[in-house]
Length: 346
Ligand code: ADP
Ligand code: MG
Image (tube, rainbow, N blue to C red; front, side):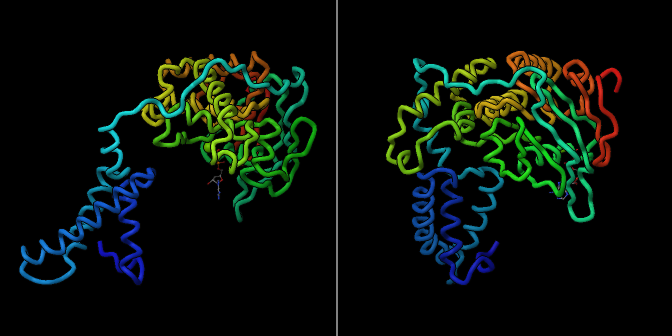
């Protein structure tokens, strides 16, 4: 690996080296990386010519090797190794004397909550979602099933504003939401998890869940930077801790979230989605890759949420899981709805 393709000046790539060597997700990593590289460069520039007996920028070769090794064996850089020598207490402290955050009132049971009318999404010539209509009533668990590529995740993306529908109408709680952006939609009470679990690496379970509350605080960026948000943060953190305890993960509050088992990470994703206080929760293949016991726990959690008045739209392949859990099923094939009804009828 030679730095020249990256820029005219060798300086450009050196800054990148420093960050990667130190650790890109740590402030101290930048300082450590800069120190290591500067000292090493100095040292190598005097040592290498003596060893080889010729002049040249041979340190570039050593840096290249170091870089390859780091990317293979220590992608987080050197800082995490150093940090391990200085163990410290949990980052976010959890005060538990705060009262629960106010919750949105749940709509009356069986009232229409989400109505999707002839939603359509085209990617160029491909019709991923072909005029699909269905609805979710308050307090229902609806399953969306069928093979990969049928357009289920795309349907979720249309409902949550991640993608804009090519045509059709989507309304939630009586108002159209198909022209809104996802931030506005989540504010109205639609929470979701994505098909692929994404915990923020280097953050604890508590911090990962607390991120879900970003719309429930009112302190702005500037006040947060100068730490005028301490009371609010304490409230949000204690609520996050309570939500985590609710699903039985309180032992792991201060563990790094991506060190948990996949099943636990899935549940955390759901907890994080719940933390925006939704009335409709969208779950994209929550049981995929889970072990039998984990699936049972997940099904229990989903039922418990429904009993508390939550409405749930669920994409899933696992038919056992879906059959025992859902009130109604919607079946999609190549972007088109081909059946809808009670699980046993379908
Ligand atoms: P499912 O979740 O049912 O497996 P998806 O909704 O992910 O299916 O995908 C439906 C179809 O749309 C697939 O053929 C997929 O390749 C295509 N598709 C999904 N997202 C995009 C995109 N952003 N750009 C182009 N094609 C896409
Ligand atoms: Mg999908």
